[in-house]
Amino acid sequence: MGEEVTTSNIQKLISKMPANTSPLEKVILCNDGTVQTLLSVIFGVPVRVEVLSQSESDSYIVRWSRLVAEYSPDNIVVVCLAESIISKKTKYKGFITGITEKHMGIGQLISSVKIDTQRSIVGIYSDDNVFARTYTILSVESEDDYCLNAQLSVTITETFLKSVYDKLK
Image (cartoon, rainbow, N blue to C red):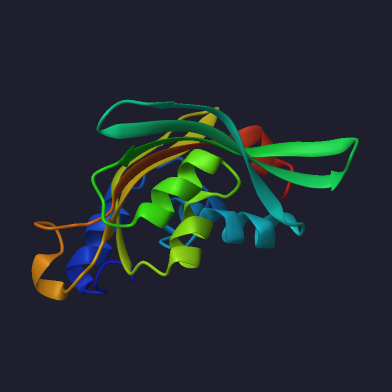
């Protein structure tokens, strides 16, 4: 479940867009579904998540990963780098177990554990070399307790190299 579609919310999102973003970049930056699925469609092959590193404290898990499109064993393209900060204070223990096992992307885990979530874009960036976004994923137990009592809290920053996406034109 994404943000409510209102003229005000759409205007806020449009106003966050840097002037130098292409239409494809805008689609990626504003996507409120799983980026893995969207990138698979864009690149025409299944995109997979590779966890590069993961560390834990008492309260959080920090995960660094990359999303790759594999056209063949000799032709693998890194299509996104991501840093995720995952709160361990959650009732969804299966989700945390999945994170620690490192076999799935966060969007895949959320779907497999069947958590109703709300995604909100909190920052967008673009320059001559990269475009990036930061967004939060919070569980929604009911409409009334959305931000106050989220039982799942994840903040993700994704960075995309423009040179990879320029080749698609």
